[in-house]
Length: 568
Image 1: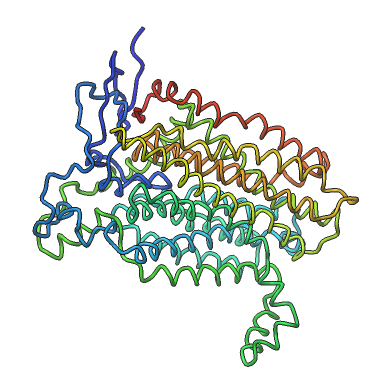
Image 2 (image 1 turned 60 degrees about the horizontal axis):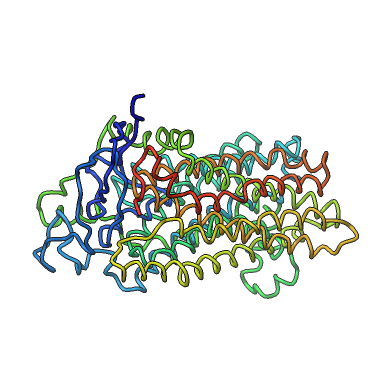
């Protein structure tokens, strides 16, 4: 029987050797031909050049071994400025050497902008009945203003790689943020449903690169042992943004007569603006207000991507550029399609780790967006809530997301880092990636608990606070499972293939996030609130063992992978 085809870090098909030996990524550097990382997988990108490295099962060069050291630099601690690499571990242009305050000031703006993008997805949802009435369409058609935006978020990362590679990460934020606001502005001024949906879709496409490249910036400025905490804040944005966006507080405040006396001279200006545009259009104005505030914090940021920093240094010094020249023309297009589409789809079809974790994340993400339709239906039908009242019910989900963040950080600091220190004392460079699954193993129980709680307490005879509180364990478990899956995928597949694994995960998540709201109304109307939500709960119970299975059998599954995977 012929040996199985396998894939190396460059995605090339190779023959699996009969007895593969261990190799490591050489000082975090991939082959110069390798495409740039994107998405959350970029957490393993340039930052790894300053850290001890991982060992990977190689199916491409079984004879090659590279000695593991804390740093692979053979250069002296300092040397004349060069465009080829950092001058040493203390190079002031290396973002890892910036002050902690400066590094944090480069993480907060992208987290804020990511929050503005994801909040924009759901801010329009409370106004879907008004949109349906104004444009004489069904409620399901009006919900397309949410679904197309979310689908655009899944497509957007495909254009992030070439922009980041050639112009730097900073330019991605500045271009995407500006285009995002322009399309949101167009959506707010739309006079037809078609123009509204088109603008919302392209707003999602424009905002997607912000979510894709942010983790790369995080890797640029924080070393691996400090990255989990900052990553948790950034990863929280896709969950906290939609839940907070649903609060719809801006319209409530602007419509409140108690607000105007406190505005003094500004009152007439804002009052006239609100009087002319209040309604569903105000959801778009509020999105622009949040996005503009976030965009202003991005403008002072410095570039953090190593390749672009060195290119600019070369231009400043008049020296040769770094040896790995950017691909151009068809080679660039082929690279982008490979890492963002072809390889992710192949990994979804052939890699159990990628397919099962992506399915799990996609389902929980889809349920989150299904709640944007289920919550209005439930709290308006059962409890008679108005728009801003049922918007406030999403506070439960917001609290759950925050608790999930605290849980992820606590387990990372108290458990994972303790194991990492023990491994270093024993002379090991890394620990098994399955230790990343502790957060998800716990969070997996929160999702069905929250769903069944909501299903059987959303009744007229039960106080409304009970189904609101049900959102806490659901959101807590949702975030824990997501954080665990992303860190596990990155640790298992490394920088390049990890980027494709996370692209597959993101494509699955945003696809189901776009589809679920479209059938939620019909499902809740025909099955009833209790059984519709219970159906989702039963599916979550079926998926609950996934992180536990990988914790138990992960090493065996990694060993049979067709891609380079972490060897421990």
